[in-house]
Amino acid sequence: MSTFVTPRAVDTAIAPPKASRRRRPGGSWWAWLVFIIGATYFIVPLVATLEFSLRPNPPTFAYENVLTDRRFYASLIYSFVIGLITIVLSLALIVPTAYWVRLRLPRLRPIVEFVTLLPFVLPPIVLAYGMIRFYSRQPLVLTGTEVGSDFLLVAAYVVLSLPYMYRAVDNGLAAMDVRVLTEAAQSMGAGWFRILWSVIFPNLRTAALSGAFLTLAIVVGEFTIASALARDAFGPYLSLLGKDKIYEPAAVALISFGLTWLAMISLALVARGSRTRVQMGMPR
Amino acid sequence: MTTLEASPTVAAPPIRPPRTRSVWAWLGVVPFFLFAILFIGFPAMFLVFGSLYVEETKSIGLENYAGLTGPCCAIAFRNSIVLSVSTAVVGSVFGLLLAMAIILGGLPGPLRSGLTTFSGVASNFAGIPLALAFIFTLGSLGLVTKLLQDLFGFSLRDSGFSLYTLLGLGIVYLYFQFPLMVLVIAPAVEGLRREWREAALNLGATPRQYWRAVALPILAPSILGAGILLFGNAFGAQATAYQLSGGTIQLATLVITAQMSGDVLFNPGLGYAVAMGMVLIMGACIAAYSVLQRRAERWRR
Image 1 (tube, chains in turn brown, green):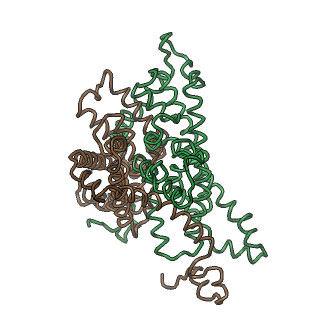
Image 2: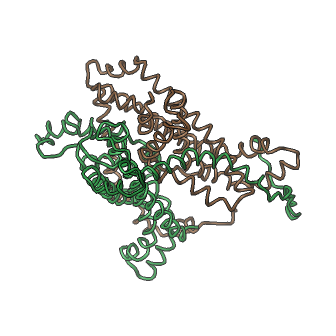
Image 3: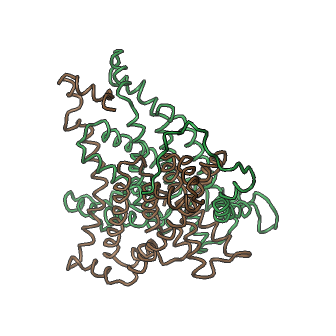
């Protein structure tokens, strides 16, 4: 590899100093202009939210109220647990499927890909509507009980996670030689479960983690489906707070932003050095 | 790490598992498809049949769809489309500029990576917290409203602007539209090779001609595809609008919300028809997006 020099490296090596006129180290003025406009638009609402949350006297009033509110913790923990269950189920569903399709049923690939893209066609509100209507009558009544509703919520979130999870896992599988790994494991006497658990899955750690953090960012704070199913999740809690209180919502909105930030930073750290791209968000 | 490496003796024919071309191979994908049928297929089918079933006549017909042109839904769909198209166009243009500024504008490295991560966060920062953040910014007690009043004596309210209109909602939606555009278009802008620019300039083109005749045509399918994605992103959004509008703005997603909670004239058939209308529009978007994506791939290797 050491003999291979990229054209870009050659350029910078032989380019006369005059060429740097176009790419000054500081960047060109239009780039700065666009960047400053964009950054202002991004940052002002956050600053405004912070300022608003600090308006009462004493400034920590809103935060104290929120951090002593039992429902704040209850809803946050509820959403977090639902998110974790979603991630585990989603992985359990997708890893074996993507693996099996790559190994044995490549013809099925377009169909599986199509199914994983369906959540983009069904907006969350439509998905929730269809699910609630279908599972609130015979033969399967799930909306009647708490557990049934929780189950439906997890199922809906697994559906939402399909596009991200499948792409992350499939990219991860593409980066290894699935067939050779499988044959090697088989020749050492491993069964299917053992192959998936000790050979394929460890190699997918990065992909699985990035899919997981993205799912967490989407699920914690999700409002549409949770509120349609009347779950006491973080999203509906914040929505209600926004209608009942003045300063507390600002504090919780900032905390919520911090959580999304945390999930995305973890994602960036995990994905660093791998080829997995940060995927886009979902309509909400 | 239980990573197994390929042995160098790959020349030998691979030891395939016994060729069972039987149903057993299909058994591996049963859980996935079972799940998809249960939680995507059945609810979707239910919407299809529900939208075609007419309650009054107890028969199959298109009457529910005819209701879409009625008072509730025509405006809602129009508003949804206007909102989504305008935020998609503005978001695409500015998102593209921002991506170009980051990638081609020579901004310092830390700013670049910071903005990329921030785009990931902001495109996922939608829904209730986003709506609240803008209420604290441009609402009647918001920081910007207050600053405009205190510093310039400019009253946002008297100027006719309100956050609780289609325009206000559009400004809020852009908060997740720009960053999504940056994320989606960045790979395409990165894919513009330096050699193309140099070849064009060597042949005597001006930088402007290079953009018009080379770079933009190459980027066009990606830009259009990303724009369509942004349209779908805004079209399916519900939570932000729900929190902001409080029922004053009619949107397709909010009509379904109202149908679901049953606090307006309850007509499930119409609700199914609205849902199906959304599905058809989203389906067309995704189809167009995947076609354009395939065209854009040609230039990337």
